[in-house]
Image (tube, rainbow, N blue to C red):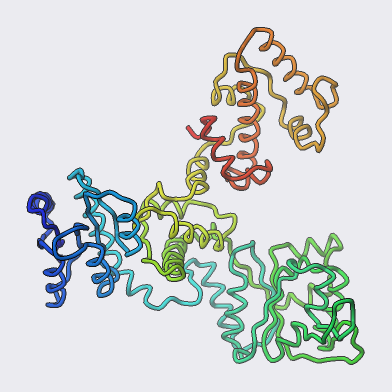
Length: 508
């Protein structure tokens, strides 16, 4: 193994670190100034990890960091300083430091930090080769390999494809791959989300319009079908397309002809259509919301994209890729992730699928305090999922469980689940005591009177805590511990539910 380089003009610091690292069987080489370090690098020497003071005669540790990162971008650099000011910390991390170590430091913790940097350095050496050329799509899971094989089989075909899968699972990526590997690759790839455009504008977006066709149509406009001529048109969220426009789309797919809005001359466009949806189109057909003949026209070849929770083995490689991608977009050093944090990432269910994982990695790139991401650095929703998921479901019918979680001096009877479900979502709850809101409201009023008459000083807080705990338990049970989804169902923010869980002691 290559040595750890220590750069510090303080002889006592060098001596202490040298002895401590020697006890760990880690080779060490010491320097007193940045100039000697740069000279050693010029001689083609290279450390496993560089530990440098920030202020030294003859040079700055921040300047040394910049020079080292320019030559060896993957080398972990730990910056030490006795001046624990904000500017030093920001400069160190902006320059790509692995970690910032204020003096005086605890020696065992400093050695542990250096050991962690060594481990990351070794991992990076392996990872650099693996990620030197990132493929357009990642996935080792069997379900994704099936998708890749299907793309390969369809590479020389112009057949219509229907891609199904949950939101955020990568349907547009698959559509782009189908286009890229098809005979139409030299033509345009045009995508439109049919659910994101108002019904009154969608027809014009798809088919274009003539000048004067409607108020505001000052010029003729080509629609997406014309723009995609010779290439591929990707219709995302096709299940949300208005019913009357489905008829026009069916006609285009059947005979290849269409009219601009306000136009009288038929137009033709040589387009391959790829559609995608997160909805069950068979069910939409049964409900009369989607034309059966259009469904069969689109459903020539169907590709199902698995949700991320069905391909957990792909999460580590996806996470590392997204961390590198986010770092490149932000112009910063790519962060690394510890095995324990990676295990937490892998155990999360990701209701938002790959898109949610990408957002998490972008958040970590910005918000994680160190170059190595640890468990505690993960966003609250991931920590909440890991905390809540192992717990057995809690029945709302069991007030004893709520009382145990939220201790108060006296308890009041909670209603059965069905009564709570009916009463709570009511748009305008009836006033307490009139009997219209269900018996649980009468119970609540009686308990409030009892506590008030007894002179208890915290009646509001005591009953509110139990009520909030009941709602949160019910929502978490329904969503199997997924906090973001539970917050959405309750109509509160994710930060609010996280704070309430902590305040009420529900994650103990």
